Image (tube, rainbow, N blue to C red; front, side, top):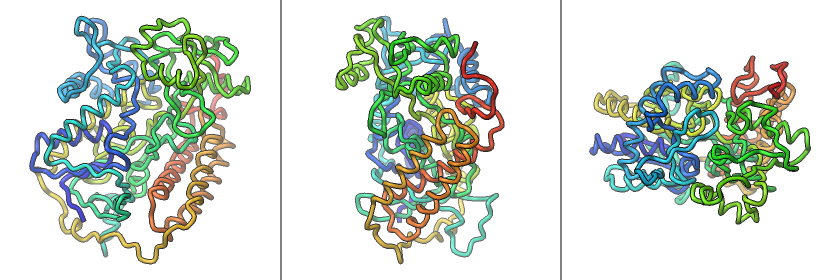
Length: 531
């Protein structure tokens, strides 16, 4: 058994910045960070575009950023949350710089500001096209100087510890407390009980519930799934953002992202044959919000039967492109594509989840002593669709607020220590080692195919009802495996993906109108095309 004052699940911008804040203010507090891959593997690491924050107050202001965010979210955002995040943004950004993050600057020492779809001003600070990688580097270097933070990599959370695990305790769904988690140490093949006064879930998104995603392989919706199983509140799971421009591949899995900033700098979308088409769908054309661009591409592919459309960079400034997008340029070359001579083949891919664990402004969930921050949450910031590059900002602001509230609770020290001590160790009695892992990989592939085919960018009532039936069948098979098998990382992730698919389908079926990233063709008489 391990004990901590604070257990952090996840090692992206949300979890790391939260841990740093607590460590700086409470050096006596023991903080354990668990992550299921290497310590630097997170959605943050793959954030290419940058961080949306008002820095140029001569041309930009908070009101413009607030309105852009509300418009992108189709008015489903919580305006008070939007105002809080954007107004706190510059102070949190300064802290990120103070922790050693380097952002691109011009010769006059002003930040170079990019612009992406949905923004009315240039306000995206970035580090070339690997902003997330640079942020992750700086945060981990800061973490590694902290003596009271321990990072446990290759540790998979199985379930949260609640009253459900306390022998003889009556479980009251209206008053649930979190006491830590059961966690599989993949290297030692041992399940640990880690108890904590406060637990933070910062597990990122759930892109791998679909067969094509821009998310890293770790994005399997773990935090949302185990909070759902603990009877926490999860909402808005029907709102999934599909990035319009992932590089086409014949192989399923993680696709390489062609940043929206490339279109912000002038790239145009074309059919495979070279014809422009965005003018049919939105007056902003390539700079329309992601849901509109993704649906437009999806529609064009259905009309043509092609596997991809093209991103045309041939008229762009070559020198500027290579300076701003060096990794994208190198990836294109490695795939045999010269972006100044050929169209880059692109397709929409699952990119960002706007829904998740319900939290308040301090990141507190409905379960006592359980916080959640970042893409695994429904914080009210994004509404029905995320404005590009608002996610890193959300992680910083909510990480800060959650840290301050955590410090307050730790100082009060009003925790149920009897229940903390009473939770038993994990019991594997009667379980057996799975002799055919092919069952797990088969079921995972079946689930991803089903979600991609039936619960994709444009949905229908008939497809959703069929998905509900298919999901139930897969759930029964996975549940049976879970109850007799010694746990493996693969089975833990599959169990979580099954829960995520259930939430997406159920909450899609409850929708009465199309909003933002959610589109059911049976709920509207309007065409996708703006006349």
